[in-house]
Amino acid sequence: MRLRSSLAGLLTLSAVITACGSTTPEAGDKSEKVAISYAIWDKNNQPGLQQVIDSFQKKHPNISVKLELTPWDQYWTKLQTAVTGGAAADVFWMNPLNLPLYAKNNVIAPVDESKIDISGFPKAVTDGHRFGGKLYGTPMDVSVIGLWYNKELFDQGGVKYPTADWTWDDLKAAAKKLTVPDKKQYGLLSTMWDQGVFYNTVFQNGGYIISPDGKKSGYDDPATIKGLEFWTDIVNKDKYSPSAQAMSDSDGITLFLSGKMAMTFGGSWFAALYKANTETGPKVDFAPLPKGPVKNAAVIMGITNSVWAKSEHPEESAEFARYLASEEALKILSDSGGASLPALTSAQDGYYKAFPGYHLKETIDASLPNGVPFPVSLNTAKWLAVQEKLLPEAWSGKRPTADVAKDIAVQMNEILAKE
Image (cartoon, helix red, strand yellow):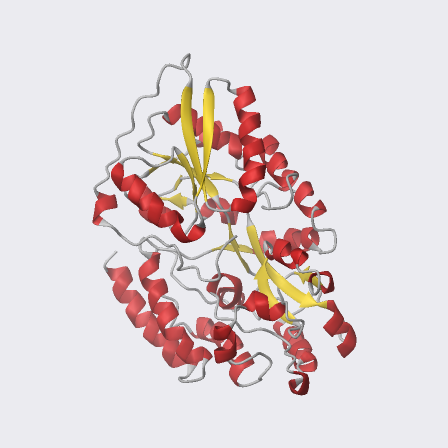
């Protein structure tokens, strides 16, 4: 599961990591049995991945794989300590936010793309795990942002369910009808979440967070500001959402599951959380994000499996990482209960069967072609911290959104100039 804050767990620049070096030991004698380790952060994936490991070991009896689980809150700290001490897992989960720093400092090894077919994976996922033109992880899963909605509230309000043809205007019109102050019912949650909420409207309006060359902030671009104002207006001007204070006291998932929120932007991976809620879960469904004034766009992220550059068994570790991206392995993961949506389309059926009540396949199939990678730079953590510090002033209505955005741009450009 990904956290609501993209800054959570993000590795900051460390002189210690920079000094780790890039020496890669020679692979051992293939006739000897070797043991490698595999680090992940999500316990929900543990059973499925153990099945994948068992399958791999049957095909490679000379290689044993030990699965290591570390919760998200400790994962990156533990990994940094392990890398520094020269005892990291041979293969470990990687995300786009941390990858540039690990790749630049030669902590992870580039993938030999001549030995793996990545043509079946979403471009937004593979592009999000490249640095300097090289791929630094084999694709495993994908997360898609869509519109979760409460069918019961739509029915009560006489509003038609969202479709792939919806625009911002349709979204706002529905939110207005579904907002009933006397019942403390709101039409659309305006949470201050980058990946899941406001980055999407920024891109849909033709704005950007960081320039393609990674040298300039897009926060002061008028199109970006309008993408942000969509949400700050929803909460402060239109009143279709609970106040910023109310949302800070409770996370968006909990608010939506209260049964008083008609719509919320959210991840495809929320399906497991909603299905587990026997009260509200059966009442909700998933649809593609409404189209913005300029284009369709949805932030796409994914987990890849990276090989530690100092692994004592680089060939065996790379072989395992490649197997994790195979159709066979991803089908096993998909069929294990819906913990992760495989990034490979041909391996997704098992995941969809785990959630028959939600239109996941239709939404994801419609959204993937419009996928946009999460914006990153070398030191993403530094400017994300600025973003998270200043944006609450706009969400609370304390300052105009345009002024806050321009201040973020100034500080972000200072950070980017030092990269």
